[in-house]
Image (tube, rainbow, N blue to C red):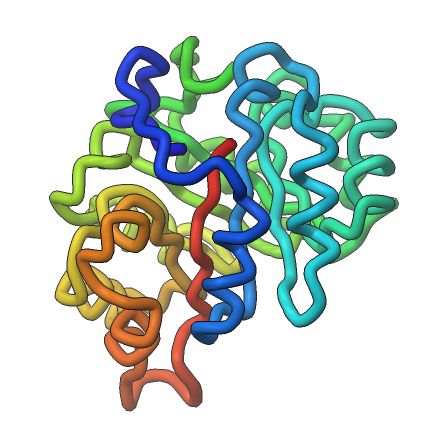
Length: 239
């Protein structure tokens, strides 16, 4: 399922079997699937463990999970299920020391989730907007052994109007960590526009669900002389 601008009253259910959808994207060329536990993001506790495990254990597909990961035990459980990378957002803002400890314990396996509204970090499934600028939080953790940063402009998410290129470019320039763009991608041109920014990759959700283009189209759009190989394309599943 997908939300529009993080609004839980504006949800669209595309398929009742996330694992089957993930498997079809794998067969179409996806190397990664970006999986979000929406119930977990809202409640602060992972709620869809069985679904997550089914997706994460698909052979030939690597899983990146976000939503409700707030404790060390949550991370341990996710990795035991077969999740490759865990996205942490809310807890990173609430307890920076905790993120530092977890990054040292799981080097290269945590991703900082920066979900922003008007440049400010949102938490708790985007239900609360903090007073912390996204760039400030990114710089604060840039020294950690993280796998990267996923940047999402909430106003763009699910709207198919294109990513926030200006904010994404500013983030890429501000940090050394790899930056993954998320939110708003509705066509191949939106992906092509990200390539000169040197993002590490982008996350595509609604546009793939609605077959506005294929995963093969997305991978082709990401290919550029600026890159030694096409940017990693991650299809998005939210359950």
